[in-house]
Amino acid sequence: MRTKELEEGKKLNLDFGKLRRVANKCPKVIPVVVQDWQTGEVLLLAYANEQALRETLKKGVAVFWSTSRGEYGELWVKGETSGCFLEIKEVRVNCDQNSLLYLVEKPEGIGACHTEDESGGFRESCFYRKITDWANGKLVFVQLRKDGA
Amino acid sequence: MRTKELEEGKKLNLDFGKLRRVANKCPKVIPVVVQDWQTGEVLLLAYANEQALRETLKKGVAVFWSTSRGEYGELWVKGETSGCFLEIKEVRVNCDQNSLLYLVEKPEGIGACHTEDESGGFRESCFYRKITDWANGKLVFVQLRKDGA
Image (cartoon, rainbow over all chains, first blue to last red; front, top):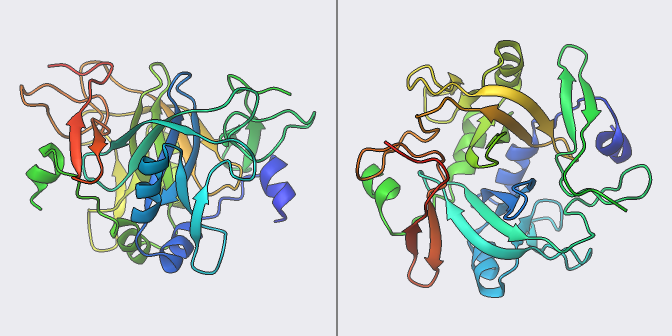
């Protein structure tokens, strides 16, 4: 499926192979949930290795291990390209210490997601579609709290 | 580190090997963020394969692929042991279609996390500690919205 269809389509086409590819490229990463500390919106899910976490805490902005850049991945300072730096308010750890939750402040008027809606507006979060019909793999776009132009 | 220390300690000891072990056991799973649809609290992060997602949508409660049960994992109907069934309100998909967000309704008076606080009360979410001091790996307990006895 082409990127455009994957991102803007109404067809479910889950990439169940992603985790394995991530693990193969960089064995030592854990998933990071990123949540807007004010609205509570879950913005995205990304991955961090120890270095990414260290940089996150040092810089005070979300840094991830990029699962798409470079053969062995590299540090990805979220916002360096888009301007959407995510200021860290808190980094939480789960009971088993194998996943993280970043509570962040996102700049106004820009989306945490790199995609745009059909009128060119930003999308607050990457989770902008929901499954409505499993048998036929149908997706429907949802209204997020602060999407806009 | 013993389980008790991992769960109740104030020492950061992140398990960066988890993802690789998950991928080795079951190559075709994706991470699932579980959020309370009313409070907005992120409750936990788990994993689903296609079968777990199908069962989730069919039963209307969160079903995961267990990363700890059985050699090759197995379906884990959250709540079957604890009573904390998570009723599905919405299943969202991210832009790249490689992670999921379950918006759920959690029963009152029970925590989504299997751990208990020091007075035996439940914990609403698995993310009950935050990192306060990276250099010394220090964790501090946070107050969640609806923790209690």
